[in-house]
Length: 66
Image (tube, rainbow, N blue to C red; front, side, top):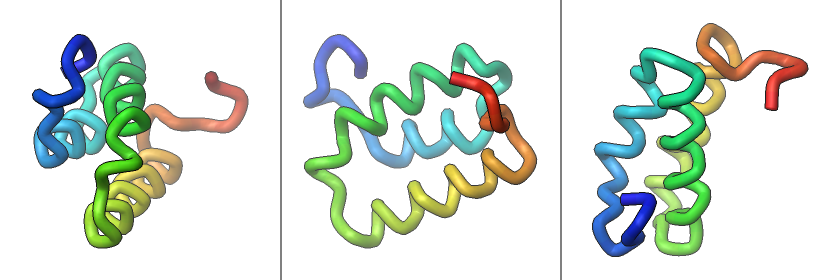
């Protein structure tokens, strides 16, 4: 999906972000999600925002990390 954005599947990317097993895995999911932003509809954007907030609350995204 990183090599060819046409292959990016929103639900698969969301799953990787939500259930990443490492910060490295999360980072790749976030990179793909960022590249998909222009193509996401409002519902997808809300779902992505909710998953990102969950990651900030209890996942790999913590203050002071890149």
